[in-house]
Image (cartoon, rainbow, N blue to C red; front, side):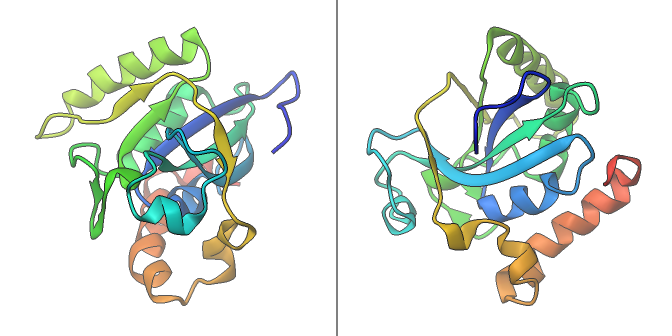
Length: 180
């Protein structure tokens, strides 16, 4: 993903497997580009196999380029909190490990403030405490090419059919007016 043009911003979010988040966010109006990648660990350019061990410190994330005139950062975060479970530490469903943690890597002081507000707001929505991490930007590494647009390329693969597709269906149900 190139540096964002002047009218767009970057958001970096982790909420379990990046295939799920990518499939959801790429369907939203105002999101110009979604890329799967890794961030949060000290190892430069980690491979998927290394990240999957849970030992690199990286989280699977999506890096979004979005137009805040069309969809705000707050809206993106509210959708993020609706489509994953921010109350399970280092876990989303059967995906377990620090690489699947719920995390927001804010890209500016304004994003940090908005994220703090949304986390506080979501604390009143969920029955359990929010465990989503809030972190300063970290070096980001694009995931291997075969991870990009994974759901679009493999909709019948079992993980996609049973885990990703229901999240896309939930997005369509709750946010139909925001879809491309």
